[in-house]
Image 1: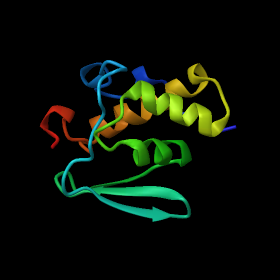
Image 2: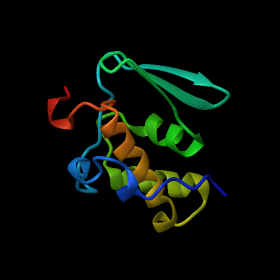
Image 3: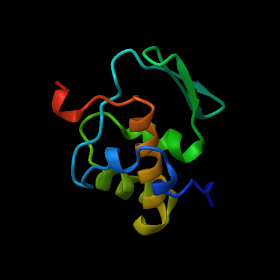
Image 4: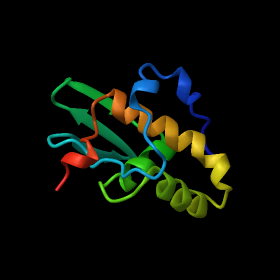
Length: 113
């Protein structure tokens, strides 16, 4: 139904970037440039000079990372949008968020606003 993302614990730095599912996620770090190509999001982080091309699921997660939603709420919204159970989509959301954190794409929610 949607691409299989790697297990979250296989992502370098996963444990260091774990957050509580009810904690607010994001917002994107200032200066991160976003371009949409064929429905997928491509991100450029000037601090690391890295380009990250997201798959469809990660693109949808990125669109919801605005500094107002929790990981749990993102899971709920995507589960409803994809018409799947929350436990089915949760690993993909956790994996995407861990990647965003590891790549330095997210600001600390406590620093937002």
